[in-house]
Amino acid sequence: MPDGRIRPGPKRWRTSNKQRRAQAKLAETQRKAAARRKSLHGQMANTLLKLGNDIRIEKNSYRSFQRNFGKSVGQAAPAGFVSLLGRKAANAGAQVSQLPTSLRLSQMCHGCGGIKRKPLSLRVHQCECGIGPVQRDVYSAWLACSAVPSDKLEWRLDANQAALAWLGAESLGLFRELQIEWGIVYALVNMGRVELYLGNHQQASPLLAEGLALCQRLGNRDVLAEYLETSAATIGSTIPPAERPHYQQMVTFACGTLDQATLAAAWAEGRAMTLEQAIAHVLGNIEPHR
Image (cartoon, rainbow, N blue to C red; front, side, top):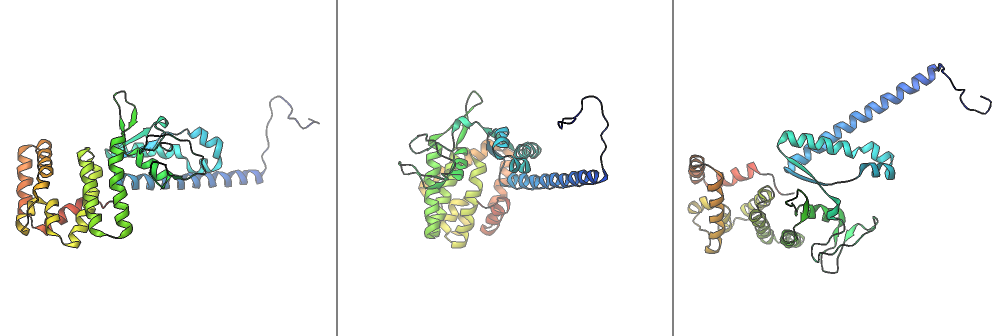
């Protein structure tokens, strides 16, 4: 029409060869981008599942992301990645949990229990109670590890668990910074034990494995005996009296987890191992702490 509007009624559009070539080129570019995105999503999901079987994600509004960040969100497709991760986790026997935003992980301080809104430009958490400075996203992810499900299938932050874990992580960081290797060993042992007491065996295993590997390199037989009681007699060392209750707790847990025949066979196999074989067996089945 003279004013530029399309005349109403049925019509037949004529597409030029140039337009057809442009459309085909665009479709091929989008196909390659989708294939590339799917490949990257798969690689990232596999990497995460190698690190553990309890994955926690803060629930987000991806529609809001799309409105605010547009093209970059469309290219990354976070909702598609979370969906793929959930399917792969289910096939691998792992669990993906989406934590509610009501936990306010990016605003919470576990030290004083305070909640303070932060602008997006502030990327460091530092509280007057002495917690921090720590990178904001890392701190939020760390707090997510201390979230526990409640009776109503909701989630809450376990402040006691967070406080215990923070003390261990803080001391480990200081020992690493000062390069005090025996301090690193004992910090890893204590952090692993805290996780065991809390029932988090998946989190405890890599901590204890890294401590065992470092302890083996340093060559302290008494500390090695604390790790591997079954080898204590063969290396001329015993577990200190203060460590016996912890050892008995681990034995009780093993007895309650395995049937009598399996436990007896595993116990005899462990007793027959040399120190080097026992250490190699443990380190061969657990990935180091990252």
